[in-house]
Length: 337
Ligand code: TRP
Image (cartoon, rainbow, N blue to C red; front, top):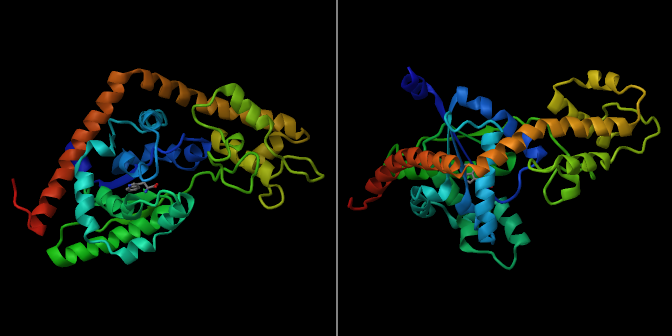
């Protein structure tokens, strides 16, 4: 029965760059909703370490982050028994297909990628070839697994579109080799804003306004106590994203972690000051993140377990990837060894 259900399930694949520590915005906005997907889809997730080195990384940090992120995803509910979790560099087919697809990606197309333009503006001293050809590797990441859907944020849509162009070009020459993947808009969960500047999205680049998944409870409490509320005169907990962005952001967070509705929250804090409210939001967040932090810490200290997860994941991924790569090599005219 098991085999049967996986066969009829559609496939999904997404990569995650191990380039920063995960925070509450990542969790409430996205990760939290991922665990349920495996009921409906056959899901592949990988830590995109090959992609990460397009900007300089400290090797020790890259190692730490790769494992930490994997542990945190598992702790957030991505069950390795139900999802294929692996590390990109463990599956050599990514780099190999990446090369082939680079020969089917046009200079003009790559030049139009907004992420390339943004990143090369940001890292002017290191505009390397990998940064430029990154979308060909991403196309390879995707096409090796013949997925139906690629769930990514809007910033990655352009890369998925490019992947679709590559499919069309490649299949146009060699026949139906790749399945045409579709961009799957990750229906945003809560949109979490920066605690100190609620007009911006929560981001690791503003650490005082950002709550990290692995952060200590006392630090989380402090950040919420210092969160910006609004300088309106009514001084009450009321949802009004436009005129009360600070309070509304805190209400959004509180709603996301408690499951309460906005009306309910307004009633709960009726007649109380912002101080009480901020403390309550902080506590609710601490209690939401506590089991995740504890579980991630436990997994990280269980090296044998973590290793077994990424080893099994890579094995399963390699099997699928190898099948596609063989087909591609044959089609383009390489001699089988
Ligand atoms: N480029 C993606 C990002 O920066 C990460 C990524 C790499 C990815 N390969 C992928 C996402 C394949 C989806 C599919 O977020």
